[in-house]
Length: 124
Image 1 (cartoon, rainbow, N blue to C red):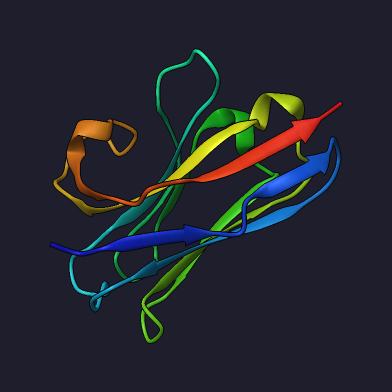
Image 2: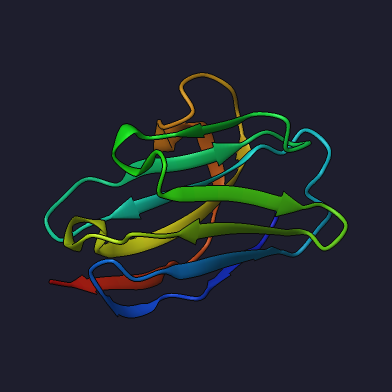
């Protein structure tokens, strides 16, 4: 079981940027696609972005395309999410997920390792 620790959350005004990081306790390169999910107030947890184990493929939910960039460094066992042009609707708890089991990448049930989350608040 891989342990995940998120960092980098905070409060910003609309239009600002934040960079989230996820540190994994073990080597995450081999066969471990990773993803970011978020859960806004009163909302379901939703997939934000996913990156394949070697970084070749990336996927984004439509609402963040062109604004967010997911990346990973397998040598450092880290994954990042660069978030630009933030909007109030991006507010929520952001979670790092790993051990992707296949299937729909944005389905939370397809991951069996989760971090504790980091809060992102965007004010208008």
